[in-house]
Image (cartoon, rainbow, N blue to C red; front, top):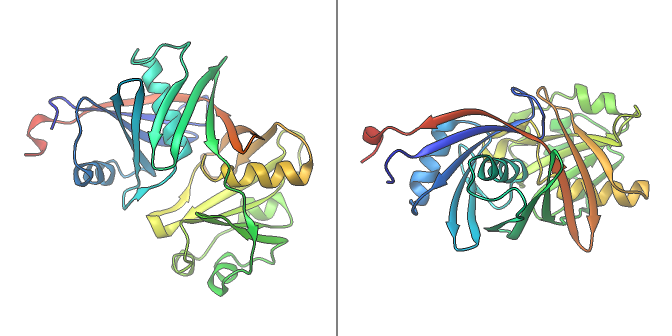
Length: 269
């Protein structure tokens, strides 16, 4: 274990503290075990904790929920890029390249915004498994699935915002998570969504970048324009700008550093 290991907590997809989605980011000086990463993520007890280790010109990046390691996470990638620039580990003018379980991901500065370059994960129409609709208690307009999640479109923004899923049923659905979405009914946003993932230890994620790898192609195709402004209507809430080009999802957001923590030398052997 590296001495004086520092973990930052950053609120992502927001421009103010205590909103958006909190992510832990640990900048490693040397490799640590996946077991230790999971223990630290469980101790942090927020939806994702990212572990970043420089390898020449690329940063190795892994993400852990309090329960499991995941293959793709948007908000913790945004948070990682934000803190790398903030602490001077990367120059503001540079595009940051991450090596991850989902291939190479990139982050670049666009004024006050950070733009992520992610894969496209479009949904394909499918039948909804019984527990899914029962847990959500909705009549869907459309149901699809990609390699991670189910996508359920419902009839109104109000239904998205007021939904109270039965998590004891939702955890039985065989997937990482469930995205519920609708067109927005105000001029401020193009679409709204919420994301539920009890199977990976997160009943509701406040703002889910990776879910927009599914939402962006779905709504861009349906609305016929880009870029789109998205709002994830959790209690904390968060705003993203999204577009799809050349089989890549580009999502932009802001971030705020909230906490800096130091792991005590005697905490682990």
